[in-house]
Length: 166
Image (cartoon, rainbow, N blue to C red):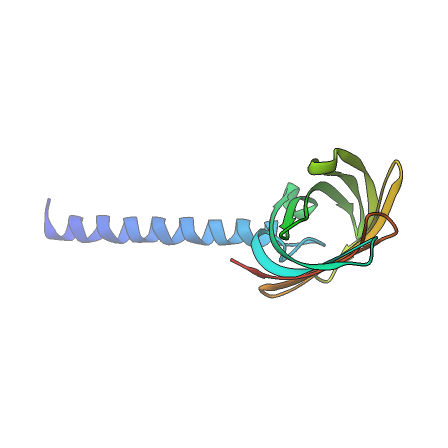
């Protein structure tokens, strides 16, 4: 190949690569728009769980969030465990504006139900309910930090978790 042709081919490949990177970054930013912006990814952290018998235990938690549907849908898993307690929450949520609705389940107790609430500005506030169970859940994300708060009148009276993305 002649030197000029090789140089032009190299420039074309670099331009195509730069174009592909630009398109991917636009797609990623579009997926992060809407009320679920900033949630996408894996999170880890610690917190406490307060049980109905009055005991409080430290817990370790992992969460995974997948933002889909151009930013209007969120799939979430939250797994937490202490030395003697664990829970495994999953939810699928969709938004219309700042209003969110969806379904949730807790695998270790085979409990499932519906949720509704509001999301926006890095925060999701929902009320979850199932037969014999109801709770308020708040998730707040600021940069790479997230807090999760759960309050109910059931076996789990309260959960407070602080996580970091990554």
